[in-house]
Image (cartoon, rainbow, N blue to C red; front, side, top):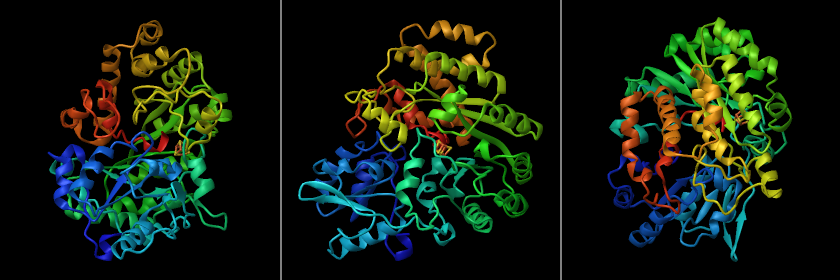
Length: 477
Ligand code: SF4
C-alpha cells in the first residue's frame, strides 16, 4: 500500500539480519511499524529506545492483534507514538502522510494515541470489503532473504474472517468490534481469479515453490467458492496445497472439490475431546458426529488431516484432556499440534478468566502458547507434561498408559525435548523447510533460545525455540 503511494518501504526480520538493530538504523526510516500479538508487545522496546537515540525524528507505530485490543502499550514511555486497531492498509497511509506533513493524527480512524496522559482509541473504519481492491501482498520484502526464498512451500491467504466465533479466539470480538452492523462483512474471500493471478505473480519471480500452505482460518469459508477454485486453480496455478478447514461447514462435495483442486492435507481444530466443552464452552460448533464423520470422508478421498488441540483451558480437567488424546487416537490424524491455553483479553473466554481471577497475572510467560501456562490451576505440572508428551500418547503403541504415568513426574528438559522434537517435525512438514533447514532456522534464533533477553522484557529459556516457530496453525490458536 505504501509503495503504491510512492513511499519507500522495507521489512527487517530478526533471524535473517546479522545485526537487526543496525540494519534498521542504517535504513534510517521516517516511520517504524511493529507487529505484535499478545505477549510480543514489548519485544522491540529496547531496540526502539536505541533507535530513538540514533534516529531522533523517527516515529513508531504498532499494529496487530495486541494493540487492536489493548491500548495500554501506549503508556510505555519512549516506545510507540501511535497504535493501529484492526486492518491497517488505509490507516498506515493516512498516518505516514500526516506525520510527513506534520499534521495532527488525532482524527485518523483506527489510530490510538496518548492524550493528556491517557490512551485514546479512535473509531475504526469499515473492514475492507473487496479484498481484490488491494495490491498483491509484497512478498519481496521476505524473499529478499535467501534463506526464506529457499523455502518450497509458499504461505498465502485467500480470505479474512472465519465462520466460527470460538470463545478462546479473538475472532468473535473482532466480529463485534470491527464491523459497523450496517451490512459490511467480516468474512471476505478473494476472488479465485485474483488469487490465481497473485500466485502467478509470485511464481514468476520465485519459481522454486512446489506447494502452497493457505493460512486462512478456513478455505471452505464461502459456499460455492471451492467449486470455482477446483475448476480454475489446477489449470491456472496447479500447485498442490494444504489448508485449514472448518469441519462444521464441510460436506463431501467440498471435500471432493478440495481434492480436485489439489489439496493434499487439511488441518482443523479439534481442541477438546469433550463434546460439551467443545460446544458449550468453546462454541466451536463441532459435534462428536462431525468429529468422527469428516475424517472418514477425508480418508475416503485420500486427503490427510491434522488436528490442533488445546491443553489446560479453564473448562477442562485432566480427564477431559485425556479424552482429547483418546479422540485423536480414534480419528487417527497424520499429526497433532498441541498448544497450551492462553487467556487472551481479546477473547470472550479470556475476558471471563481475567474477571474471575483464574489468571496468574504476575506470571510473565512471554509470547508463549507452547511452553507455559498463565492459568491458576493445581494440575499445571500435569498439563504441561501432557502437552509435551501428547503425540507419544496418541501415536506410540502403549504410549497412552505410559504418558498417564509420566505426567505425574516433575516438568523436565527431557519432556521439553520430546515436545520440541514433535513441533520441529510438524513445523518442518508444514513450513516446507525440511528437517535440516528447520534445524538451521532454530539455530538462527539461538540468541533467543538460550537465556538472553529478546530485545524486549522477556527472558528466553530453552523452550522458547518453540515460540520462534510459525507452525502454520494461526487460524486455530
Ligand atoms: S479458533 Fe479458528 S475456527 Fe474458531 S473462530 Fe478462531 S479462527 Fe475461527
